[in-house]
Image (cartoon, rainbow, N blue to C red; front, side, top):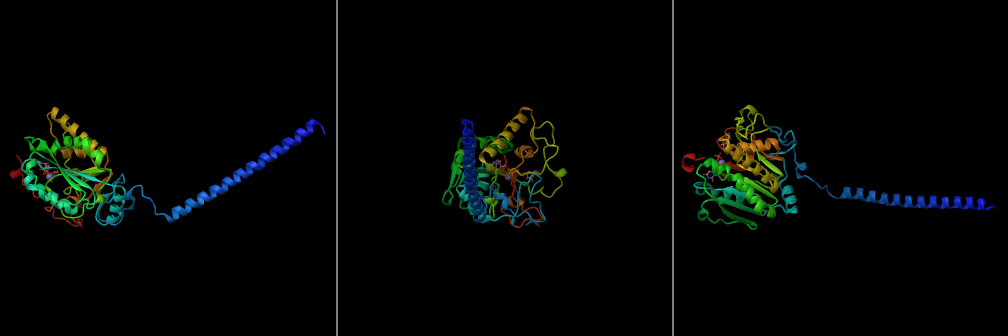
Length: 333
Ligand code: UDP
Ligand code: GAL
Ligand code: MN
């Protein structure tokens, strides 16, 4: 046999060995992958589905008479749409903790704060760590109330602006500051409330979201041309169109999102002041502008902030928060 013939034979032999090796390697890999895929299938069949977004579990068809979803697919929360226990359980697993900001400046403290806090202890985020941040010019007048375990109250002293419009608007500056300095380190979510309201029913973890807006009870059924947006082109709050009319008495979300909202409103309020204009409904006008430009990820139905003076309650299966009676003559400076 020539050396060439021998070389050819060994080349064929090595090629065969390589083929066999490659085949064995591919076959064993496919076997392995097969088991992996099988395991995955078994796992997905036996373990419950992990919801990346809890709102995927909502029953959007449970309230045919009202809108339960926005055009950008944010849920509008109504009674019967959600499973309260499911939300609570998931938020406990997520270690959710909530900060509340509430302003009680001047005569609003004596008139409203106790009712607000005592009723919140009965209905707001029960079972979760909650800290109330009470902003007031009269820290000594805040009476001690009994708080459930894991719940705290902190008082932050603020100045009393001479105009009630400024007391209301400058909340945005103070909310931004407290989030920056403190809340973002200790709380997943923050809710900002007017003090002139009383909790009457569950206001629970179903209301939590990345960016949460409140449908104003007086406007949720009205045509858009009745919405009281700011219509003055000179104001930063000017709007010619919008989605909904939101109520500034309640808004919330993840700390960072609420800070972005508060900064936006505060900067625009200050720019208006430099231009000698004031938006029609003060901070609420700016908040509406913000939510028009940055869509909220969750809307609360008027169950969450109802005015007893409204006659038609056909959609309101449960009143969770009620407006307290207005006493402007007596309370505003
Ligand atoms: N506020 C306050 N003292 C005042 C005026 C307003 O503490 O003298 C706070 C308080 O939290 C109040 C909120 O600012 O709920 C908004 O004002 P108000 O409720 O009077 O406005 P409305 O809801 O009637 O538009
Ligand atoms: C009123 C409410 C005001 C403001 C206004 C908007 O009913 O008391 O706070 O929200 O609606 O038009
Ligand atoms: Mn109010």
